[in-house]
Length: 262
Length: 252
Image (tube, rainbow over all chains, first blue to last red; front, side):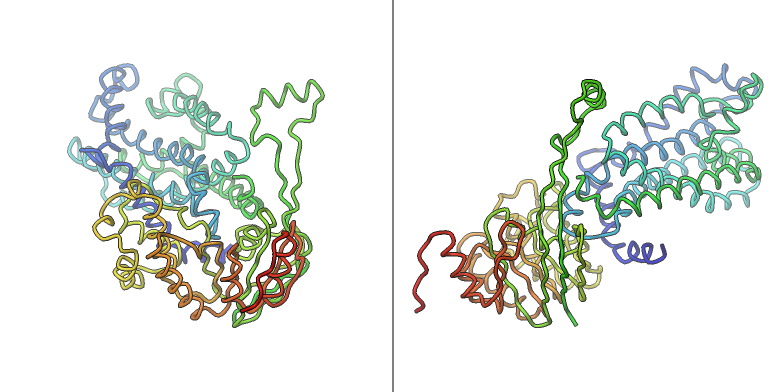
């Protein structure tokens, strides 16, 4: 395992340059450039704020709802794009896989890192919005975002590995993931608060939802100014152990013969 | 200490009749009792044993589909063998389909960096090599343009220039000895000879029998995945030419 991570580190210039190239290609002919990666969550935030604020969070007002939405969408988009683009990562890297024996995990890593960069940009906007609208409750708590983001990144990378491998063998995986995430978007407290679910006796949808745990790891420090609860950490870490374990196991079994499936 | 050791190596590709079938087809076939997706086994390499030592230049010749390029990919570590053992000591640099792996929207300069990092360069080492690579390719200001606008020959020039800017221990070459237009061909041949002089161990696949005879110490004749003959390049080349039904040229 350690030798594998060292092998990934050894070809760091290669995958780092791929990530840079992905970013440059995406915005090569565009005027706004990286600004577009913000437009989706900001647009969704504005729409939902205008339309749903009274329905979803009547007692808190737009000043709390807008950052709540933005933080939720940013994190959610990171997870979703890591998985959906991860489905294609081995096909996109096929030319390299056929020429150069590298650890296979670098192709999903490329996807997850691209998503991370967009997430960080959106997070900066969220922090600015919170600071402008009602200031931070407890500035020290913001630092806990760093380890939380590490957990979130590990989760996204593991999902990308699993999605990429599954999609090579069953190309329906991408479509299944798209449908699955659409459903999860409405079942997970992104547009609405978990309180809304609990008040209707559907609290279990949020409490046993691993995605909700990761969302709260980011939202709690930023919006509420307090550390995420132990239950949230336990849920997130437990999910991470399961997903990362599955990713490592599947990668170990499939990566040598993956080239035959492309 | 560069060395390659192959011990009774075999590689079998298990191909499916249809690359991918949809879920609906799968269900229908199961229900109608037909075999779902017939597996076709292709034995690409059969029981190959080979010992290549430091300082040796080995040539591989054979008909199309004999398994030469497959063997090179096994040596490079891209295909895992189905059975048998392979031991490779030393850093491997390979010149396979050299036009693969270009990022179309990136400029020539950027591609030099990407391909360089792929070959294991670090930012420090590649900086020193960028200018010599650019000069060797003779592409001039075309390097500022995205690679998607290059002609096939220009891509080959660039790919060759980047791929040969390395100091390999073990060099694996797959039919890239003949590239580019006539002027470039002369330069490329000279560069290949320089590279080969620097490398500790070389395995070359080529259809150009004369260059194999000139460059290599030993040659292997692959036939339908099996090593049919191994010996001096002249012997093996003559045997191959005779098997194809062509007359062997008298030695000068």
